[in-house]
Amino acid sequence: MTISQGMKLLISYDMRNVAGQEYYQFVLGRYIPIMQNLGLDMKEAWHTAYGNGPERLIAFVAKDEYIMDDLLHNETWHDLNEQLDQFVTNFSYKVVPYKQGFQI
Image 1 (spheres, rainbow, N blue to C red):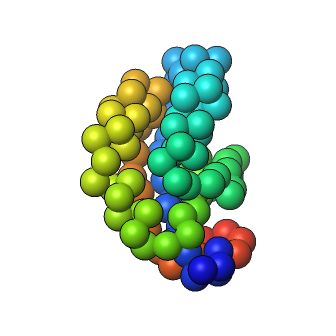
Image 2 (image 1 turned 90 degrees about the vertical axis):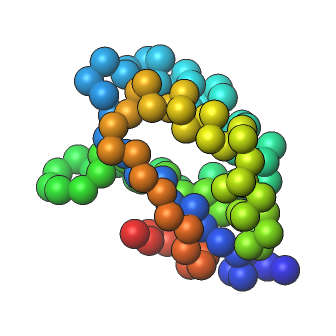
């Protein structure tokens, strides 16, 4: 199965004002590596500098819907997001069929 047949997990949120360095240490040191261990690859990270919308949009890709379904029912996924919650607000996610480039 090619990546073009995969699924994309879009995670969006706003950063808390106090997040700073601890946020980056958590995301780069724990969140992304654990997501990779669960079978997803980080493809994109977007920052909204102006206008309305979430401050961050991060996209992870799974090669098929089975890997994505396993992730969404995994306790580690839920625990990671509870930990992320100390650094962010307005957390949301959705799963869409993979397309290259920016998706919302």
